[in-house]
Length: 344
Image 1 (tube, helix red, strand yellow):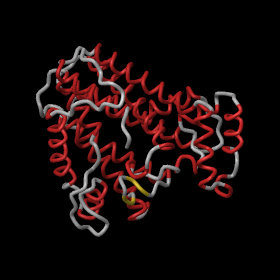
Image 2 (image 1 turned 135 degrees about the horizontal axis):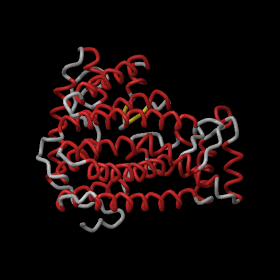
Image 3 (image 1 turned 90 degrees about the horizontal axis):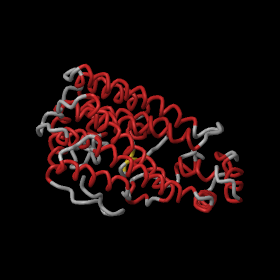
Image 4 (image 1 turned 45 degrees about the horizontal axis):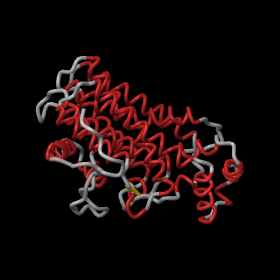
C-alpha cells in the first residue's frame, strides 16, 4: 500500500483523476439534456453552466468528488475507464439532489460564491429540480445490476435519516458526540460509501471486496464532514464560497461544537449558555466570534482535527483490505488526503 501524503499535501493529481471528471461532465450534460426546458435551465444553473439570466457560463459543478471516487474505485478493483460511468453519473445526480434540499432546509443563500437555486429562483423551483434530479438518478441506476441498485437505494435512505438528525442539531435537542458521528455517517458517509462500493461493483468485485471499498468511502466521509464542520466555523468565505458564520448564527451543533460542549470546562459552560439564547434576537457578529473562540478553548477544534486524521487512517486501512491496484490506490489516497486537508 502506498504511503499517504503528509498532512496538508494534496498529493499529485494525475491524469487518472482528471479524465474521470471529464467523462462524468460529458455524461451529466447528456442526462440533464433529457429534462424539460424550464427544469433543464435550472439544472444547468445548479451545475454552474448558466447564470441567473440563462446565459451560458464556463462555471463548474464543483469538484465531482463522489463520481471521481466511483471511477477510481472501479479502476482499483480492475475495471476499465468507462465501466463505472452510469454509477458515477447517478451518484453525482443524487448528490446535487441532496444539496438542493440542504440549501432550502438550512436557509443557505450562497454556495460556490453565488446564490443558491432557492434564493435565486424560489423554494418551489429548487424542490422541483431536486425531485427531477433524483428521478434521473434512479433512471440511470436502472442500467446497473440488482446489487448496485440496492446499494444506491440504501444509501439514499441513510442520507435522509442523516439529514433528519442534522436538522435536529439546530434546535434545542441535546445531542452527544456519538450521535453527531452517527449523523455524519448518514448525511455524508453514506453517499461516499455508496460511490466507492458502486465503483467496485461496476468492475465486478465480489461482495466482501466491494464492502471494503465502501468502508473506505464511509471513513473518508467522516473525515470530509469533520473538515467541513471546521471550515464552517474557521474557514475563509473567499475560498469556501459560503458564509462562515451560518452554523454559529443558527446555533447548529456540529461536531466541533458537540465535542466542546462535552468537555465540561469553563469555556464549555459559557458556550452552553450562549447556545441556549434566542439567537434570532440576540445574536451578533461579535457573539459569533466569541462562540468560535469558546469552541476552540473548550477543545472542540483540536478534537475535530484529531478525529479527522483518525478517520483518514481508518479509510486507508479499509482500502488496504480491498486489495486495490497499487497505482489506483495511490490516486485514491492522494484524493482522500486532499479532501481531509482542504481549505474549501
